[in-house]
Image (cartoon, rainbow, N blue to C red):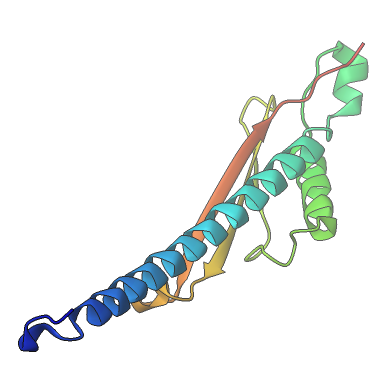
Length: 143
């Protein structure tokens, strides 16, 4: 089979071009998957820290009134201690932000981290994606 002399090798160029496109799309997919995976781990950490911090109730207030109320200092300390021992501590950028609501009924934890990019670093100046996750928890008495 013979083709036109000006079209020799055109299929080879098409296959090379499509192969390069597939590599680029695959690389972007890997970058985005790592962002999703790290975000899931940060959400897990925020939930665990919030749950631990929510156990910082004011025992004297509970004994005196029977009402469950958070002790902001104790809740923050418990949250920071748990964050320091959590398996994702290496992903965190700084300590978690732990806020007890004004009525002392819930605690909100916010953690931040970042993911280094490989191929998408060409499109993002910093070469990283910043991720923030938060969770809120309330103390309760089981029974």
